[in-house]
Length: 316
Length: 308
Image: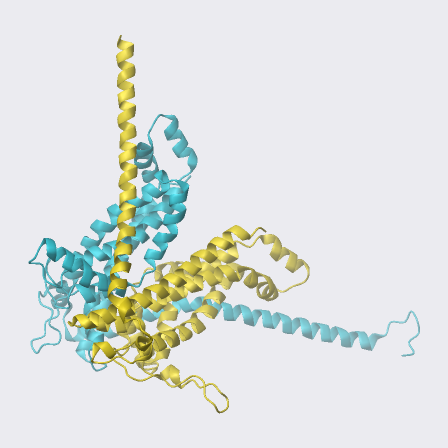
């Protein structure tokens, strides 16, 4: 190195610069690659939805080539595996709707009551204990609730009403309602807690009691959030599988009477999956048509909920 | 005199309103008790029926036609292996998606679609995931009715839970941390790798545990893809004596899981099998309760300890 002081050594510096530039370029390239990877990971959820729609529609299209849509919607028998095959989804839908109605008539009043109590009445310690407990309750696997419905609640109900069959929609619906309570209560409570304190203070300043404040101020203000909780509860009830498969029986039965056994859409899918249906047979395709119906019912409720939320939204 | 009567009336009115308050408070407590008592009844009922069956043999025996000799060996091994596959897919995918949405995603319609989609996926009934897996993984991709199919299905099912938990944990990190790291010349990925992900790991862990607790209890999607209800052999061992010491034959093996074993025993008419179902259910409840409890405790600790 015999460089004259003050003279700029051109060649080494340009080499260093190219190295720096190359490093910079590779760094940018690597950053871009990582961003792309992360983006693809985020897209997996979109692919899941596309996959669900694709699979359900693909198999249902084949199904509806064999079974006219009108028969599917109006036939009053569901006997897809018999020689004299009938495909009336109403039969399964009636089971789904009846059990959901029973479940919701338990979950909505009790869940709302618990939410109001926890958000407006309960002392701090009760709330601190009850919230995690409700969460635990929501984490119990549904097959456990199924066991409970079949072997605890049904015998209990039979004690009051001896004619009740061993499989029935009532006990399944009741247990399903209890299962849904934590979801309804927890989301409603969050919505009520989000109502600003000043609204309550205003109400108390006018001389209103806790009950009046809760029912006439807090609940209306939190209505959009409470509606969201109800919609989630309905989705859970309609899509619930194991409780019904265990406790409500698997006999298709066109009835709105909760005291009878009946198969639901979900229980039918489980029943077929437990058997050994060859891939591509009409029986195999029925479960996708049933699944599509289930998705459409859930979607309808979700859209209704969205509209409801939009039109009752209160902004503070 | 009129004044006195008015005052008395007002007092009566206030008293009756207070009574209303009290009644309603009691009603709320009662409703809460219904939930709590049901849970206690469920737990006690299951414990009374099931605990006598919980011997060591119960965990080391295969299912059998004779209820007294039947056990849950294949079921719990299957559950563990399926959970392994689920975690291997759900955790990296969920964390990556969460990091992308919080740190990278531009404000455009693609991001909006992804976000709305994640919200909606959380409301899709679990059995529909089973149908997706049956059509796609089992037949289209040819994975068959294997541990891999089940693990992938459950991974998709809990992905929204992991993503939401990751996003919430990342959102709690103050902006100053990022700015400090950028100021020192860190790239976006370096900031995420060295700061964002480590600092949010406890929150992410909470979400992962809750998701896994849900996955371990899921029955419907696993039945739909065709898990066996009666299986008297174990999948090939994941470890072997020769090189390279690990084998992945087990991912393609048929399997059963705990909730399916329980379903199978519950739907049999004999009371002796119901006892087995209670015992299996008791183990399952303890597992999910322990996992959920751990997650709740972790979150509680987190909320208390972190002061930025």
